[in-house]
View: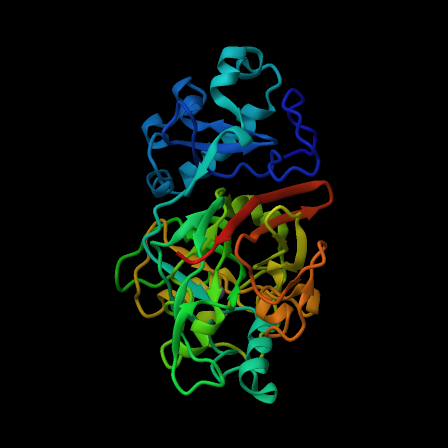
Length: 417
Ligand code: MN
């Protein structure tokens, strides 16, 4: 693909997340559409049902008239990739009737800020990994022992737990501060009430694009065939509930009340140009976790906090490339025992922290368990998330004049009900 500015009539700003090199997939609704599959270019969404209905895509249009992308993804990468390349070709044609025919243009292109972006996939199962070495080291230092911050298994396998799929919501939602059991340090017995330590976790997640049967395993070499694409993910966490409940089986009610994902699935193919070398993994891993090539990805990540009636404050900047384990290793590990996976399953990275304190991906780390509060631009202080705060995750890849982004992953906390 050349680097020419592909469409002139649809003004795509150089800092847009949705350049011609992206072409993500999502689902939208508006006053006249209940649910159509869509892509994005610049400030516009592209209605894929209308694109197919008007003969621009060689595919049964009905697959774009469903509440979720699962059936489209299920068609397989040879088809979904060719549709994506087809869309790129269509957008590259300056003489296209799509551009010159106003009626057709208005049917297919809609301003992104005038539609609702919906949850893109029906998520069957959700897994959360714990694959950032800086995050694991910070948490281990805080709650266990600075000298033995990593558990003995950490450098031998990508640690994970099975989470809750039903409470994963698309960007733009709000939820009530969760309540639960906490055990204050100065109390013999637990108490029940709204969490006082509501935290964020800066994560990404990948969407499974191909199912397996029970008993099958996916090798690190095959893994990319099974990964449709990625989204941003905020794994909201109630730290006081978590501290009391997590031994010995791990997170439960401290996590399952809400998680937020961004609405656009960025395809693995769009992310390929941004692959970088992964961590040197020492000690050497078991053969099923070893992999070939550059499998990490350079994705710049940011988290903002906006108080009610206030403005956005940058909390941290991190990068996906700081993960110790790659998605390919996570998927190989997830299936090595024969666990089956299904189209639409979501596998989250775990909190993505970098080596510098400005790169920590949770407030737990940024404020070091509340001991170093953050001062916001309105002068107020935060140790954890307050009621009516809005948290926004952004992510983008940039290399020379190539830029693609994820859009926003945003949610607002309401008081306990
Ligand atoms: Mn997490």
